Structures are given as C-alpha cells and as structure tokens.
Length: 276
Image 1: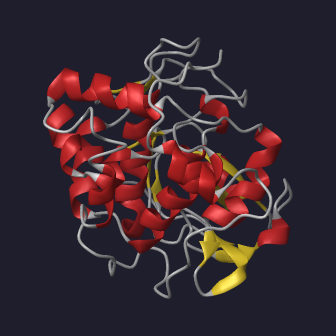
Image 2: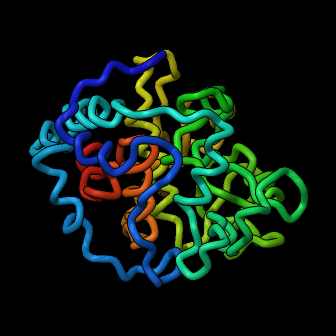
Image 3: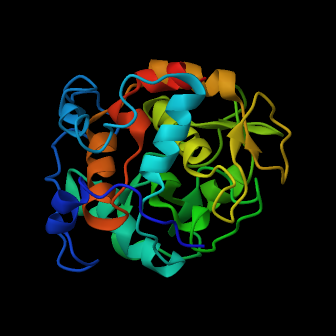
C-alpha cells in the first residue's frame, strides 16, 4: 500500500529536476567504464545530503540508524514493472556508448533495444531474488530500481534465486561471475554493488507497508523465505569493492528522475558496519 510521506524538505530539489518519466535531465555520464574506481572518495559528493535528506540519521548507529534510514528511504515514488524497462536504459547506460546498457554480472555492453526474453536479449534481474519473500513483480519491492539491473537472459536464468557467496565455476557470458548448486558469485567489479543493493532492500522493506520484512542472513539455502545470504560475504564484498562513479551516478539518477529516494550505503558506506 502507498507509503505516507514523512520528510519533504529534500524533495524540492529532486522534483525540480524531474516532474515525470519523460524529458529526463540526468547526471552526466562519466568516461570510465562500469566498475572503474575513479570517483571521488565516498562521502564527498553525498555530504550535501547530510543536512537535508539524511539529517534524521546522522549520528545514529545500530537499530536506531536502521529505523531512521527505513523512514527516510520509504518516501519514494513507485514504478510499474513495465516502466522499469525504460528506466534501466537510463540508469545503466554504458558511459562509452549511449545506445547500450551495461549488464550487471557479465559486464557486457549490449544495445538498449535488445531488451526482451529471447537468447541474446537482456532482461530485468532482481538482485534480491523476488522469490525470497515471494513479492514477484508487483509494484513495490518487485519494481524497486535500487535492486533491478539489466542482465543477459541466460545469465539471469543461471543465477536464478540463488543466494550470494564465494565459489563456483564459470559459465557462458559469465564475465568472471561464478556459480555452484546453491550460490552465485558476481564478478569482482560489481561485488560491492550487489552487497549494497541487498542491504538497501533489507532496510527499505521492514514488513510495515504490506510487503515482507526482508533481512540478510548467513545462509545459502533461504528458498522462498524473506531472507538473503550470505551476509558475512556481502560485508566483505562491500569493503573490497567501494562505490564507483557508475554506481554513484546510478543512485543520483534514481533519486532525481525516478523514485526520489537513495541507497544510503552508496552515500555512506560506513553505515553497513554501523548496522550489521
């Protein structure tokens, strides 16, 4: 059900940047490829939000920080699942080819027009597997851009609903990603991205707005339960692969032009340890 807006000061800037899903003005793309660690240190660009967007969270830790961030990021605009197609063509645009998107796990640059369900197409990958909590593709967690990414149809199928962990074997178009019978390891350049997307979902969806209470744990056999693993590994990946220019721009685009909320762990990586 709709979330009651709780904080409005910051939205003046965001809504001025975009009033609809057409005629978008988004942050400029940077030249480095996805995964390149050439952005300013974390916290520099996000500092402008500390006195506004994150004001109620600054100085908190543990459950108090998690609760505050949940309230902040729950004030969002929701997209339909069909609208996600066009949004991903903007959020995940290849910095070196405006006609392409970067596929998350494989790292391939593929034409925006190749979205679909056939071999050679890309589709909409739910990083927090939609069966973990059984929320499907309904408007809400099933359409939240902060964990939806373009991926090759076959690679998406290979990942399936597996939890994340280290280990496994390579596969076609893996790009360095690995898989085994019960887990999936993304390529090194997006390990941190995956971790921060999973942890965003755990803070955004707390069971208070008609959706399951999503939580990370240290299991790789979560099935349809509203949990995702493996937390200890995700924390390692978060440290090993800090937010880069591609990930930061993506966060800005979603905030300014689509959902009007942010992934706090991109802006403040230290908050992962402060909560977990």
